[in-house]
Figure 1 (cartoon, rainbow, N blue to C red):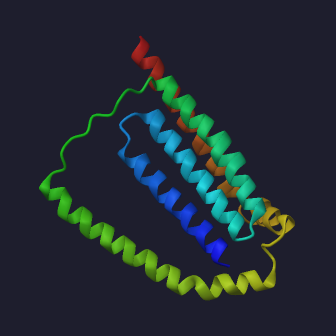
Figure 2 (tube, rainbow, N blue to C red; figure 1 turned 120 degrees about the vertical axis):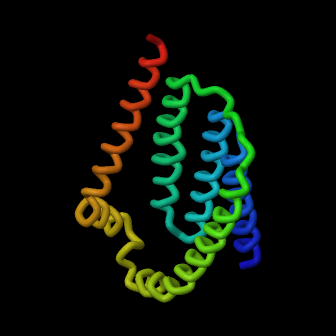
Length: 167
């Protein structure tokens, strides 16, 4: 149990460090690489939870396909180093207040959802690949397809923006 706890904290720290690095990077490619680190750390956390299918999907779909798409769009746009501006005092205080409210909301949601997570794990409905695929391709097929259309529109938009700069 202590080895699992140590691995959990190591993966959680890696995910947090990768997320902070993602935000602080000035070059978009470095941000994309930091996002890959976060995705791999999350896959490790899914493995610790016993969700091997979700961990494999995390690596294959997000760590692989989606990140290749992000890197392709970044290269297509020829994005350079981002310029940082100093934060205004008007935006600083409300931003901190919003972050505190969001953290409280997330903590309350996690505290409330503990019982429902335990109940769904006891039924075993989502423990199998068959249960996950039935839920994905029957119950949530429209959000799944809308996500693919959204990604397609984003790539087309990046292509239009890249062509506009060349001419």
